[in-house]
Image (cartoon, rainbow, N blue to C red; front, side, top):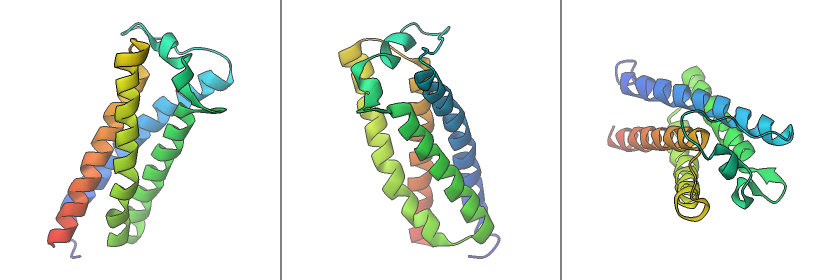
Length: 147
């Protein structure tokens, strides 16, 4: 890859890293609330407490938000790794992580809407950042396969 051909990927990675940082802050906040026994405060939407205390907020003993934090940390590390070494295999691998994360996030949004019948602003932020990360990673993968 020449420096000029890397420009779109640099923009994509910048968006990915920014979205992953926002998602990480969001997921760490929710995870900390879970482990401290509190419920997230939600001013823009009512229902954060219902969603955070539902049976769907954990998988066994693990809070779903902690899984999100691990996903976002993986995306941050991947983004910074690409910025450091500029190897295309990193971009090729991203969709294998981001697409399943997007599908899981979609499932959680479905549960909020149809099962729990409450909306959590923090969960919607996570769904939005996951969607953005997935879209950027797939776009970069497709662009890479055309070069």
